[in-house]
Image (cartoon, rainbow, N blue to C red; front, side):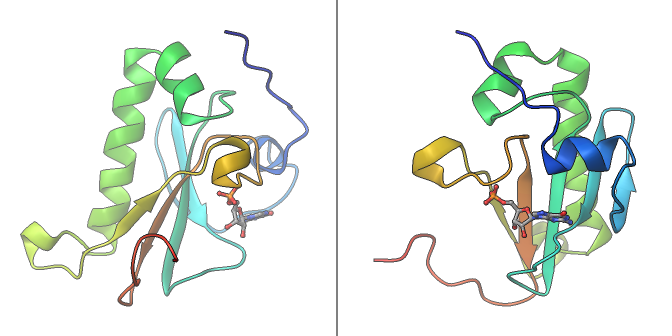
Length: 125
Ligand code: 5GP
């Protein structure tokens, strides 16, 4: 299956430093930054540095090092905001939209990390 990456998407520009971002943390293969239009008191976007469009693209094509780094970077965001329920934190939601049905607006894989309030049911209706 062919995955076509648009290197003019807004997150590609953030990764190249062409537009600013409010960085939460950086690792070798991953960048986390605050969402520009937060839907909750904590709303962080976590993106791989590599050119991956969707979760399935990333899982198919990324190296083991990138995938491990990405998973651990998300955990570091959870840790940074003291959200882990296992550590008596408030909890969180991870959300990844993919393609048309998921209403993915930016075609570079991103995981939303949401918390800071009770988030409501997962899907409306
Ligand atoms: P999606 O709908 O693709 O899952 O989510 C895209 C997210 O990117 C939205 O929550 C939107 O607010 C955020 N976003 C779009 N443009 C920018 C930007 O230039 N900077 C930041 N920090 N977030 C953005």
